[in-house]
Image (cartoon, rainbow, N blue to C red; front, side, top):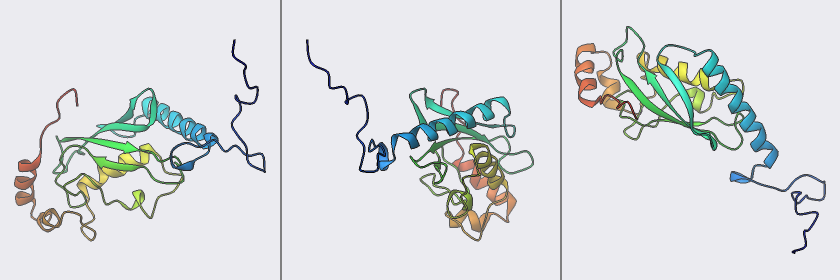
Length: 183
């Protein structure tokens, strides 16, 4: 029978008595628990009260609450009406104090989305606040589809076409690929 070290069940501490146990990015284990608790709360809010029609996001797996996948439908009355896009959200170890990384996983022809799915949206960068949530992000993204910020384009071609609705719709149709049910 092997001997058990009675202190091995406790994480090492520094001189102040704080836990030195670290996860990704050096975040203390207690931060990971706080992030998980916050994300569980946001998930429950999304499930109980979806923020808008055509919006959803859920953790990709039960074992990792920090990676979510979602769907974003274009709002009625916009050139994106009838289109649905796959998105991903990656939450950092210090969420909600830092914004998640949000990307379009399916091709999205839009002035504020580049060819790799990166998004130019102020609340995901310099205007991020811990008061914002997944619901806020999803609603903002849906709104951005119909109301791009042409002053800060990632796709200059789409930005230049935006005011010519018919030409924009033709170009959008060339790039749009409907999602498969299992995507």
